[in-house]
Amino acid sequence: MPSPAPLPDPDAAPGARPTPDPALDVAPVVAVFRFYEELNDFLAPAHRQRAFEARCARAATVKHMIEALGVPHTEVELVLVNGESVGFDRLLANGDRVSVYPRFETFDVTPLLRVRATPLRVTCFIADAHLGGLARLLRLTGFDTLYDNHYDDAELVALAAREGRIALTRDRELLKRRELTHGCFVHALKPEQQAAEIFERLDLARSARPFSLCLECNAPLRPIDKADAAHRLPADVRARHDRFSTCDRCQRVFWEGSHWRRMRAVVDRLLAGGAPQE
Image (cartoon, rainbow, N blue to C red):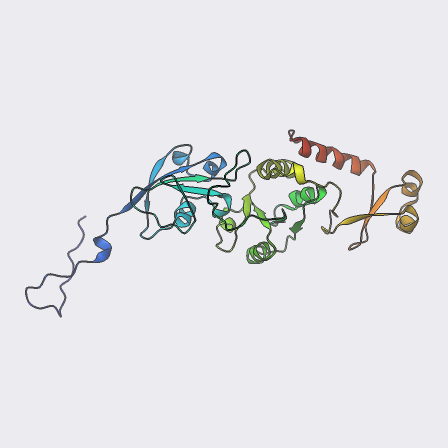
């Protein structure tokens, strides 16, 4: 159906031509996008593993279009427009070619402009309400991980931003929040598979410190003499074990029993990069 003709301006002089609407006089902005590696998981099937054209809103930024296409900005580490490294605030022009990359583990991109001003100096996390098992496994391997299934989205994002934490979630919309600078979408469904995914993606094995944090409250563990812990131990544990650690926050005491051996096996698989058990 043709567009209706513009209404005449009652204040215009007789015979004057109507003023054109600037919005109708601007050529559309069409850019070519190509997403790499795991970023393709967020795209519509027709856009995966290939370059494709996308019509952009007027004055659209790189960040706006990346998220309009389904990819949370927290998943992106590097953007090239026409071969030049740019930030999220770069305005798109007609004919731009946009290449979007995830975090790099295997080669150095130091000379290029990453899309965040500074990297995180310390790797620490905050997990959303659906990732309690993952939070425990990250604590098990020594990574400071906040978790509370009562956090709402706003509180989680505020804590992540304030404390420099990487937000872990299976909620794509949460990762699109403007205040959030570092986050990971967790693809796997089972905790050990999730932990293996995060270990591989962020290359965590080299900085793991297994059995250094309390699994319950995330506080550091410290060794404790058997005599000092004796009043908190079951009689059979006092008889069979000599090495203990404790959490000063929750007062729990830990020892190397059968549960510890099962956890040790999980840690060894994560550090070795092997396939997690089903």
